[in-house]
Image (cartoon, rainbow over all chains, first blue to last red; front, side, top):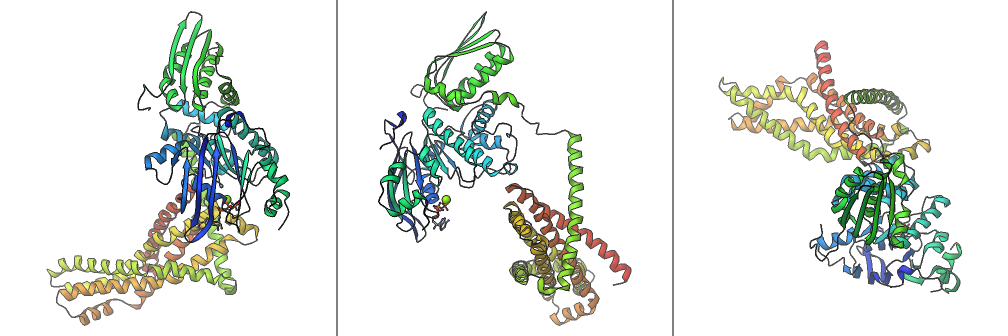
Length: 259
Length: 379
Ligand SMILES: Nc1ncnc2c1ncn2[C@@H]1O[C@H](COP(=O)(O)OP(=O)(O)OP(=O)(O)O)[C@@H](O)[C@H]1O
Ligand SMILES: [Mg+2]
């Protein structure tokens, strides 16, 4: 790796290990033979053209969908084989932001952020209220605590969804296209937020994104999926891939050339 | 709660009040478990502290958002009491994370919005809502009538494919439940009324009673109630979801009128199928009645003759007319509630409920009005 590795990922503790994964909807195989590892404190980016299965892969990682074949270890636990209790314990330690923010429409932003805390901690209401405010201020939504999601712009909803995903101070955050629909300034601010969360809290990030600028800024490592090959076609540091990959599809992606 | 406090490190709190202020020593894991244990004690002490609050954090070996919230709360209490607030000994990594949180954000609007509003505000809000609801309803009735009449004048512009879909969903698919309800209600009514009438030897008059009651009242009424539950609610939910997903806005920007595009086919479809459903209902109710009469020992032909004698064409046609009026009201209110849906997932539920409730009210009220009109006209 040419990029300087951040201190927190020096210990190279593996938090996600995917082994020979086959993902399928019924008979329709989305990807096969996918194996990779994500280390503690890493910003790991999943790339690939539209429809290549990035969201599907994410669904497998967070246990919403079981692998057709292969195993996935999250924080040393096999989601597929885990009991409901074990599964919940893992789910408590990860946060997810869905491609379509998925905020609860009938609750205000602060209630959205408080909900997981209410369910999983013994904190007094006052404490949860403050934590929720701090998380919302972290994503720049101070003053919108009592708005309903529907009263916000798309980008604000995205940020609120990140705040909710962070409510329980997860060790791994999964973000599906966090910067889609954000202006460049906000999007750059989001990149900074991700990096500072990683540096100060040691949170591991698994991010699906298409934003090339943001990939160069934040990603320690990327994997690239492909719809035709149905598997990983490249992995490594983004700048290295851009400069040295001899796979035409990978180059095309980084050079933004049309097919 | 950690299961084993001896092996799982939790937060520890030591308070050291002195004349010049309060010293707080926090150590251990300041995560949500640990903070939940010490929150009440620590914040209470800080609330009462004067002059100076100093926190020693050198024993903290983990801190996350919950810990940061605790420190924020303590700092705010100190600020409220105009006490000096100092914090020392926090490991640089954790200090960086505490610094990331913007404590001033809390000052801006620390009050939670008062959720349970007073009686007066509540009444006012309800009145305003009712008023704007009524206005929307009147506007919809106007728009829908215009759209329906222009649909009748230019039948080519109606989306017949959608009308047929509605006929299938609201009509054909409803046949089993209509048949079942009809049969059972006919059976029950005949049985319940035959028993007292039998004492006078008048049990065959159940046939007359059934014929009139079904064709004039029960047939259209129960069909309409079923239509409300099955289809009015479905229209509201369908159109409401489209509204929430901004599909309705997409129609408008394409220059398509949502009332013409969404409401008219549904109302037309409902009006077309409801008379058929009513006839179907009545037939099955009569079959149910026939079963009872038969078991009382009368031949079916006698039963049919009584039904035929008592029920006039006017009764049947009047009943079918009523059914069509109900259909317009139920389908119309379903579409209107759908188009009026606010944003958010719960809004769709609210519109659906409201479509059913308003549908039932409209059916009952219009039934009463039509009863008076029919009486005056001598039908
Ligand atoms: N629920 C589903 N049932 C069947 N097939 C699905 C389902 N969801 C996705 N697919 C298929 O799986 C493939 C991968 O979809 P996925 O949503 O993972 O793509 P993606 O890489 O996230 O695309 P995008 O960048 O557009 O979000 C697509 O071919 C899609 O048609
Ligand atoms: Mg996707």
